Amino acid sequence: MSGQVNVVVIGAGIGGLTAAALLQERGINTVVFEKNDYPGGSCASFSRNGYTFDAGASVFYGFSDNDRSGTLNLHTRIFRKLGVVVETVPDPVQIHYHLPKGFSIEASFDRQQFLASLAMRFPEEKDGIEKFYRELEDVYEILSSLPAGSLEDVAHLASVGGRYPLKTVMLALKTFRSMGKTARRYIRNEELLRFIDIESYSWAVQDALSTPLVNAGICLADRHHGGINYPLGGSGKIPEALCRGLEKFGGNVHYRSEVKEIVVENGEAKGVRLSNGEIVHAQAVITNATVWDTFNRMIPGSRYRVSEDRFLRAPSWFQMFLGIDARVIPAGFNVHHILVDDWKTYDSLGGTIYFSAPTILDPSLAPQGKHIIHAFVTSETTEWECHVRGSAAYRDAKQRYADSLISRTEKILPGLAEAVELKILATPQTHERYLHRHKGSYGALLKPGQNILQKPQNRTPVRNLFATGDSTFPGQGVIAVTYSGVSCASLVARKMGKPLEYL
Image (tube, rainbow, N blue to C red; front, top):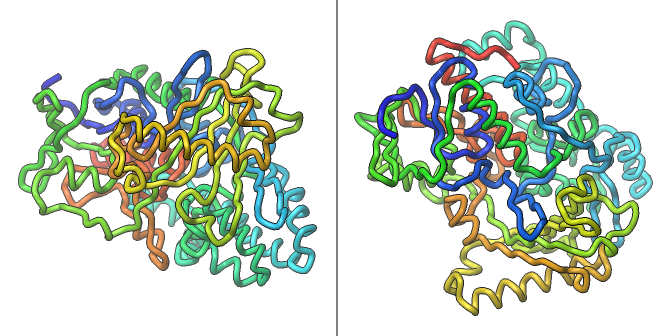
C-alpha cells in the first residue's frame, strides 16, 4: 500500500501490536507491517503433525481478574478495553527449580508456602528471606497502585506525582537499587544468594546484581498476586487477540510486508519504505525491532548508528520442540522447570536449561496420549556460523546438541529420549532469520551499575520515531514489552491530541 496514515508500526511483536491496538482504539489510523505471515514474533505458536508449540515465551503474567487500578494485570485490562477475550488457565507453580547439591524448590503461587520452603532449606536465613522478599512486595504494592504510562510523558508524570506523591518518590528511590545488592543487605548464605541469582536469570538473563530491584518486584512479587496464567491454545492466542482488537477499530496488519528502510528527512521520521519499493508516509513511526536493527539496518548512514557495546546484548537461544508419549510425564509434574548442573556455569552459554510442558495445563496442544516439551538454552550465532545453514553438518550439529540437552533433562524426566516422537530444533540463526533480530538477540540489557532509567525509552534521537519492545524500558519478557507498548501508545496518543484513558 502507498499513501498516508497517522502511525506506522514496524513488526507485529507484542510491544508493537499493543501500541497499535491502543492507538487505533483512540481513532488514530495505525497500520502494522510484519515480514512473516503470522503475528507475535517470539510470542507466537506454530503447529506440526498435530502438535502446537510456543515459539518462545511460555510463562505469562498480567491475566489476573483483580480489578485494582495500576500497572499490573495489563493483559486483562488491555483486552477488556479492546473488547476481546483470551481464555487462560492458572498455573499453581511459576517455576520448579532443580539446582546443585539436590536443592529443589517450587516457586508456588502461595507466597507463604514458597517462603516456608526457602526457610526450611536455609533456617538460619529465615529473617533475611522475609525481609528481602518484603522489599519486592513493597515495589509491587507501589507499582500496582500507579496507572501505566510513559516516563517521558510530562503530563502523565505530573498527574501520577500529584495524585501519589509519596509513592512516586519511593519508587524513584528504588530505581537506583539492584536486586542483588538489596538481597545482600539481609542474606549471607552463598547458596541462597545463588538461588536469588537464578531467580533473576530465569527471566532477565542476568544475575541479581545486574537486575534492577523494580523489575524484580514486578515478576517475583506478582507471581504471588496475579499469578501465572497460560492462554488456552498456546502463546499465539495473545497476538491473535491484539490483532482482533486492532482490526475491530479499523486498523490493519499487513503480513509478508518487510520494512526495508525508515524514511528520515532532516532528522525526522516521515514513513517507511517496504521491500517492494512502496513508501508509506506517516506522522509517526513505531519500531518494534531491536535497537541495533532499527538504527544500524533500517536507517541509512552512520548519524544514528548504535555501537555494539553501548549496551549488553541479550543472548539468543538454542530451542528444542518435542512431541512425546504422555507416559513419560509423571502425575504431579510441574509445567515449568529450570535445571542448573553447576553454579560455576549457570550463566555461561548453555549452562541453564529452561523447560516447559504446557500440555499439562492445555491437553489440546497435542494429540491424545501425547505431550509437548519446549526446552531451550542460551546460545549465540558465533557457535553455529562454522556450519552452512541447511547443510548435513549443520543438521548433525543440531542433533548432537539436542541429544545432550535431552540427556541432561532426563535428570528430572527419566526415559525422555525413548519417548520422543517428534523433534524440531532451532539455533540462533533461526531466530535471526525468522525474527529479523540482530544476531538472534532478544534486545539490549543494562550493564552492571546502570540505572533502570538508562534503558532506552520510547523516544529516539529521530523526531517522530518511537520504539517499543525488549530493547526499551522495562526490558525482556511478554509483560515487560506489553508495558512498553502501553507507554509508547500513551506518548504518541498525547502527541496527536487524543490521550489514552488510563487502563
